[in-house]
Image (cartoon, rainbow, N blue to C red; front, side, top):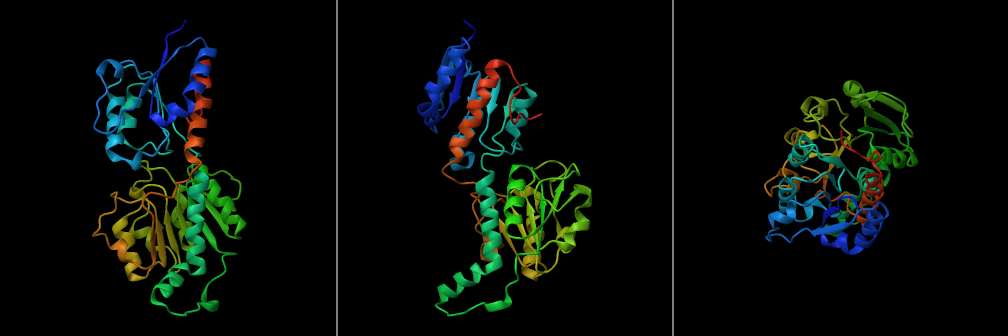
Length: 329
């Protein structure tokens, strides 16, 4: 029999899918050995760390910072690790680069949370468009304050989406259903479903003046770090809203605060920030034209099942020696 597969995973995953993984391994003549990720503060023996060949985590990195640091630390101590599957789409964390440099295969769960993130984006768009923040404020003050016809119709407005991965594509689909015109900004300027216009990243400045909604769904790379700063915010119309569900470093937070305070843009929905958790002294907390979520736009009951399904499909591919889905190059 071939060498065993030693799987390192959190307890929830192993309880729910352990037998399925064992069956898949057995079908390819491989025994399964499992290593349960220890609780925060507990230590895993070096001898067990040295046996790990495959790792997956189907929870949320942000849910428990101490557990996450410990999980990453174990991976960095695992000399036999061959493949890691992560629950997120972004791979900008330094640990991932370190593992890739070691030759570890890295696969992501890109697309697993696209639907809930896109729905969070559209919830903000609809909330701003229909005046939910004003209604909530009027309710707190116990004021009967109709907004009437001052709200603009969504149909015919333009949404500029920067990044057309799984999340960007789903945002585009929902935006079209609401009657918006969609301009997609992507690295490769080629047609895309639900996009009325596609431009390259170099053409971003040209499309900003016609953006009613600027939605950032791009990964954090050297090209996108600081992508939207003061100069680009100044190119937006005064009635425009900025939505960021990518990474905090894509958007210049200080420049955004200034634009919001000065009224050069109408509002913003932010799920990601330069520093997380967002410091209590940040002006963003007190701005009435801002909706904040604590890096929570992706939260949904079905995410863990979708992440696990991707890992299990890739496990079959890995056991057969085939190309893996969502492999990071």
